[in-house]
Image (cartoon, rainbow over all chains, first blue to last red):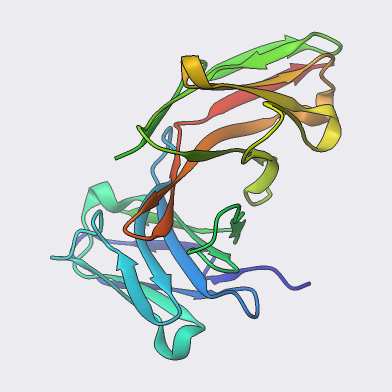
Length: 116
Length: 115
């Protein structure tokens, strides 16, 4: 089966610029996650969607980060304006149904963002 | 809220050595526990998982993990590591929050196996 697709693979921007990441989950997966992984740390959940609704965005810095999942499929994560501390790998993951137990996550390859 | 602690951040072993990576979690309710692995240049993938029943679970490539409820631990083990096990290993806890499952990851352990 096709995996979780993410683009771009790498992105370098200057601080105060804006950037957007795209994710296409596995077909049929209702739940989509965006994680931020800073070098030397584990993935931190930024936002979780169930279909096209947000179920958890408690750790999303809403003054600069936004995300949407139109039609319950693809998703975009945007940062505007970017700060130096946003340098990280942004991981997208999906699962069949985040309301069920036992769900495993399928991860994309991630987007490595460098903010200069 | 749940949290996960991984005690060893960087482990270096020779081939055929035994491996044990520590993981402790903090959560007052029922949890599901996972180990994910990220091989160099690849994406994160599931290594093994525990939901209920036998606390000793077996995963791919000869890995196993033991859930000890009294210690809030879920340590990963492998009797004899290979060079191909060089990777970063993440412990994760999945707990119910507001009706949905929320997955929290540990900081990760980088394992380097020397031939």
